[in-house]
Amino acid sequence: MNPVLLLVFAVGLLLGGIFFGGLWWTVRRAMTSPSPARWFLISLIVRSSLVVLGFYAIAGQDWQRWVACVLGLTLARFIITRKFKLPSPVHGRGAGERENP
Image (cartoon, rainbow, N blue to C red):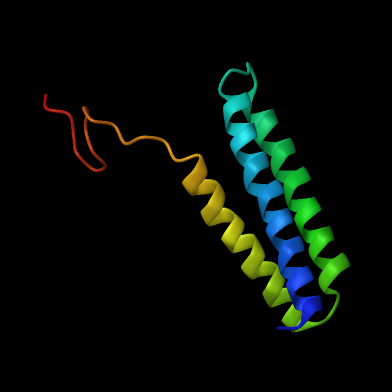
């Protein structure tokens, strides 16, 4: 494999870790905040800006580098969601079930 594409993939993985790790941190922080909407909005702007600027800086106009970045970001998403997965509820209603009147 091309070492440049491997480096670009690693940068995409790092950017994905920052993006999804930042999202996890924001959700935890916003739940105890008196203004959660502000947390989510600022976090979205900062995280998205970092990823887009990082992609443009590392990938430029080369489509192969863009693909490597996106694959790294996607792998980071799977890693972060597996690492911070919440346990499923044992009791209670499932998705789509209605409460009995």
